[in-house]
Image 1: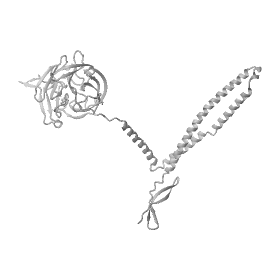
Image 2: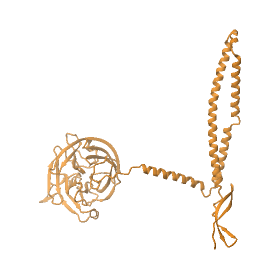
Image 3: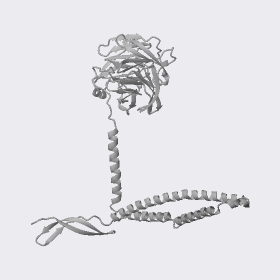
Image 4: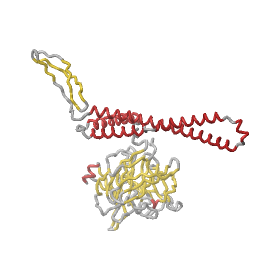
Length: 464
């Protein structure tokens, strides 16, 4: 069988008349030619709609042109009226002149000017007569009506699809343009302080209830918060007694899985019993504890002392913070006995407290871990009992307050590098109403919250 390409002319009848269509033919036998043509749906006169749309645009342009001409005619009319007014005044002045003075006046010139005015006004009336603009407006309305009627016949939504495609193309082009103009996000390495402060806090990641149960609402938890800590997989949980004051022990889990499964834990007691009498010498109080280089730092029970105990050897030390108040005098608003609050960040270990001299305003102290002393202090303008809790990031203190039972706000900051403070507003969600502790960890850039006995964490995002 021999094949060849034949250009066939196909006449398609539609609402607009006949349309030519090219098709490919194939020779079948000696004298028979077969052409297969895919004819479009001719129930919708798309060509006529397109013609009418073009005609609508053309007429709209004519309307705009005529409107412009009318505006020019109005300007000319104003000019004519002004001239006519001047002529009227001149005639009035003539009427007041003495007869002997009229001899010198050129009446022929005045008559000529009046005649010109009459001719111009007649021409203007002729142009307005018939109202070209009104006729054009009627044409546009009629064509628009026909287009709307024809669009209802567009069963295949030809016009709608074409318009949506044009809009989609524009959106894609705009998107590509925006992508080109967007600067790629610059990741901030862990441990780096080359940023412009706290940007936002993620939604809460709820882990579970502490192992002692819902009755133990106060406490703290987290990971080793020393930058580049050796035991990065280790977790610690330190619930206070049900009275919300005394820390009797801390529990250590080797991994997160162990914490979730309550297995392979190690308990480090902070109290001893001698002859049925409890010894609180190395016990703690309040929820201000933190683990730094595998040492637990906390407020020694019933004192203004800092306590430190090694989680491996249980070696314990203590030093006094001169002038620091204690025993729930200036604690946070939602956490009792947290007069002395430890915090860790990329720059080291800190302690947050108050003194009688500052009348309850927060004091930030830099802890020398080698000597267990507070070497430098900064006094802020923020009243500590007006704060829910606080944490440190890159030497900057961030304080929070409760906005609602389910929402917390970071509202205050103090930069120890510049000595300046300020108010900000960074909102984040919480799983329960009360916040008993907040610990920031620079190793994973997370915030660890103890909230009514629930262990919760947040991802922290900084401004590049």
